Image (cartoon, rainbow, N blue to C red; front, side, top):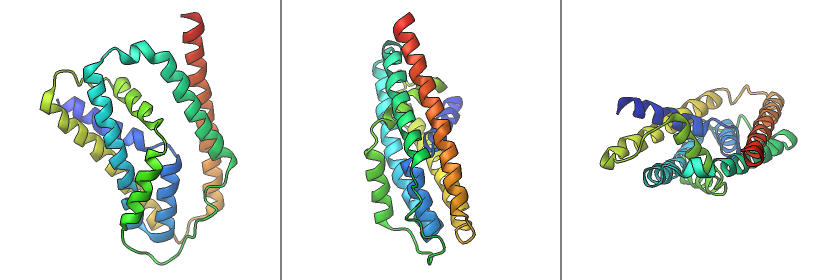
Length: 210
């Protein structure tokens, strides 16, 4: 069970790491209002990620062959989503509304709900969670109630990531260089585009030659 818990903790981190709309929102909150506001925003993302984990893990328990059957389409759909997100990140300025250095404030339910709404607006994230469970080889079959520690471990991994993320940028909020952030975001966007194109290519290869 312990290896599965460690894998689930890693899944929670990996699901949170990509620099997408949620990460940008947490950045905005952390830089504008401080660590607590940023972390509350991250908790909204954790809630949605945990929900997706529940769906994924029970789906895996019910149908272990799903990924093998639809692997090609998951590569195609996931690759398109990742490439589109990378394109958006590389060619837009998501930090234009940031106001670093404003007075720090505490957490707000509004921060949390904004993150929940943003995460839910990207249903493609469930493919990411589904693929992560398959990639890490978490065995959910016939675990019954023992599956809930795995779900909690996913949530803990996500929370740990967003705590560290918001703490870091909340601490740097008065000294951060937004121009550097924009360039880092563009580089990350190009990397995501390359990954997305590679996934689409792999999916097309599977579709055409296998």
